[in-house]
Image (cartoon, rainbow, N blue to C red; front, side):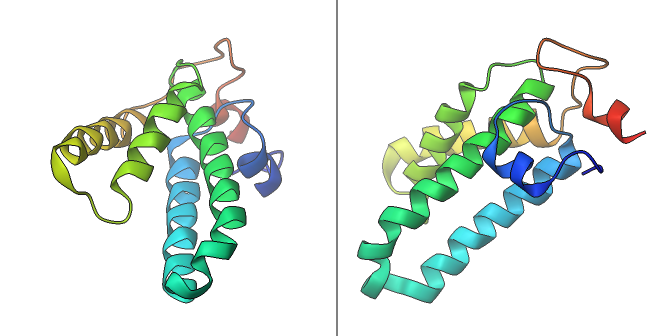
Length: 133
C-alpha cells in the first residue's frame, strides 16, 4: 500500500484498484479477524454480537474484492458471488453445493490472487503499481 492509500480507503471504499500484494494482506487480515472472532466468542455471545461483526466484515471484504476485480478489469459486482461462496462454505463445507462453491473460491483465488492486473489505466482508474513507483 502506498502513501495515498490508507486502511480506511482499503476497507471502506469500493472505488479504485488494488494490487495483488495488498489484496492478499487485506484478505488474510479479514479472514484472520473472522477466525479470531469465532474462536473468542464461540456460541455464547456469537448469536448477539454476530449481527454487528459479520456485516462489517462482509462489507470490508466486498470493498477489497471490488478493488481487486477492478484491477483485473471486471465489475465489482462479481464480489457478491465470491462472498456468497465464502459464506456458504464457512467454516466447514458440507454437501454437493460446497463443491461448487469451493470451485468458485478456487477461481477467485487464481483470478484475483495470482493473475496480474491490467496494464496502465482502465475504466476504474490508474494502475496501483504505477502509483507505487
